[in-house]
Image 1 (cartoon, helix red, strand yellow):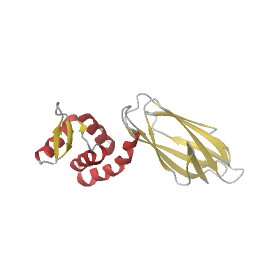
Image 2 (tube, one colour):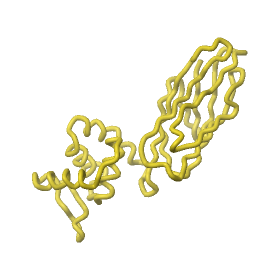
Image 3 (cartoon, helix red, strand yellow):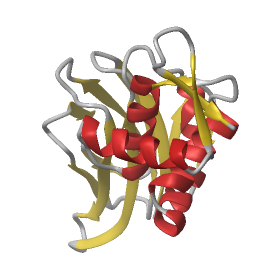
Image 4 (cartoon, one colour):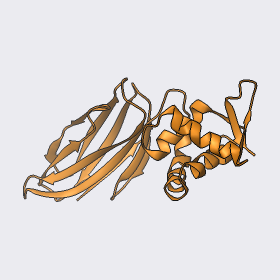
Length: 196
């Protein structure tokens, strides 16, 4: 059995591990194309992060193959970050789970461009390998090459690290990097940073 997700004409087949960028308050509709042995009733079970989205699937069970719509309503109160939705396909005829698929919702702040996600995957690897300094260096070199504000750096840091941080934590990282000559402060308010 398999599941096909379609979004704006783009089809993800077989093993689904799809990343979708969304903003708080956004509503997203996905087409689900459920395949399986003819005549078997297949149920779609959604395991979600209910704190960030309301998800409905219609119909959630039918004889395969069939089409369903999945509506993801991201709550206005959703905090920026990565959230996983698991889609489980269960063959009701045999009682066997025949597929588990996952969708990762990347909830962005309203002022964040969706293109930033391209960088978070690599930046996360740098963060794991080199820590905070590697992450900040990468952000200033590739994401904001003309300089970034403290707010921009903090938001990207939290996306890549996958956790909230205090302002003081990032201030300490930036201070150490300035002392070592890796970055410099720029701008009249001294709240912009760039690589040296």
